[in-house]
Image (cartoon, rainbow, N blue to C red; front, top):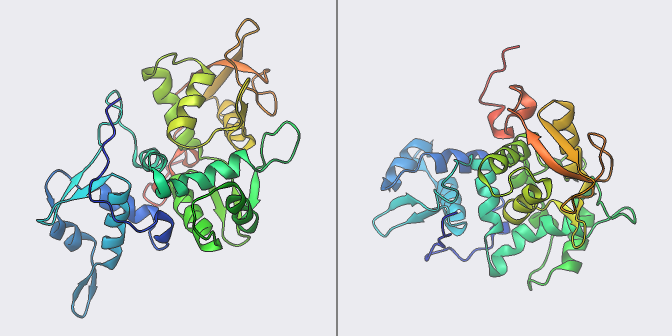
Length: 300
């Protein structure tokens, strides 16, 4: 894994302050940036026509957000360069898990965006087994994040909504704006992609524990209980169960292995699997990243 490079000219605005930034715009702008890309090229392509020429405020917000996340740097000559493109030289990450990775790499006060997810998964429990809850309301999450974090900032509904509206299109979770309810399950596409890369390119690639620890440490929280035998959050376990049902994943229990994870229910006849095998993803919408579903036409 390559060394992570932090942008030396980060904007100071809090990440949760970018309430108008959306995943689709971030992805489009980021994927159009090559080394030494003129800012004018991005503005001409993504600017919105108006009476005075092009309206580019939304582009500026997206670029500031990407700069804060160490994904893009901008020189004084209004030239853009991608950053940290080769974080995992063995394979190419798609945009969605890449952005989740960068969110988790932030330090100091800017780590507050990742902390919301950690609180939702590790601090909100419905049973003594502490496998977490599938759904949480925005109001409840505001209360828990305020209680469990210490960032010297005022937690409000707007900050949680920004986080939910950003992560849902990335496949980090699902969000129902009609009910202000957050479903704490990643998309099948994101979880499948990361399991696939881990098995083929990471050390101890067949180990469920090793794979989930890698995902938990780099992309999004997986465990609702750590220490001893880690417990997989029920939202993640639901997706694992779906992958198994679709024939894309198999889990194997090993009675002589201590490197296992604890699932809230038995999957593939085991509640404490040790190894896994990942197959190619089925070519259907449930295995496309949410941002892809409006771009691809499914042929039955």
